[in-house]
Image (cartoon, rainbow, N blue to C red; front, side, top):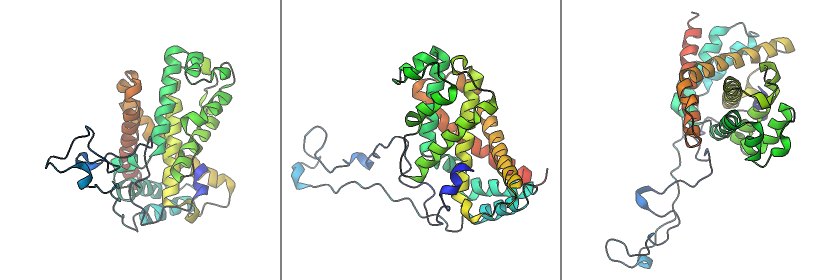
Length: 300
């Protein structure tokens, strides 16, 4: 649970989707055609009622503040995950309840849970777009497009470390930290997944790399939200590792199912569709995880 140690958990009053969660940092559009900076109409003309522009000063546009969510919404997920962790990974029903409660109640459903991924959606789209380019045109051309041709022929871990600032620019927010730490964990997972030759990257391996990243990002988001510092892990390091491995495996199964469902869309992916595709994968993965959690909770 790499990033989970960096944060004590969301405050109960935090909005479900904080206003600062944005993929590209663009300012939100003003409603009803109003100008965000309160300036004159785009064509330099006068308002419809004939008054001169300086007679009707527009107030500065401020995006609406998201409504405050239920302050106790993380409690059920946190309590069930604590029971699962305390069992050393044996209490699978509590794991199922924790994940199901997190998606359905804490995060407000699969769509809102996906929206909460924020920077991880943007990072995932940049990673997937780059990998798609590498499969289509070759590693060297894909790296040259990012002015990183000096990495061509280097070990795959070095190439991915060199991509870190492109995939997930470093920032100060928790959300940006989750995206970046998930990418670093993905680099560490490459060898275990049998992905060692970037020059020979295949379409299936591209999907595996994205699957690893999305899994790590969702795990980090969940652990930070429920408050990893308030969850007591087993003192035995082997049991603690088992708890983490089971959570990661559970999430990865959900992500893998979502990617399998979207295989046709992935094959026809174009650069302008990558971000929307990644958003759909996160939403579908959260929906599948809620169903899997319900099944696990019932002991089936």
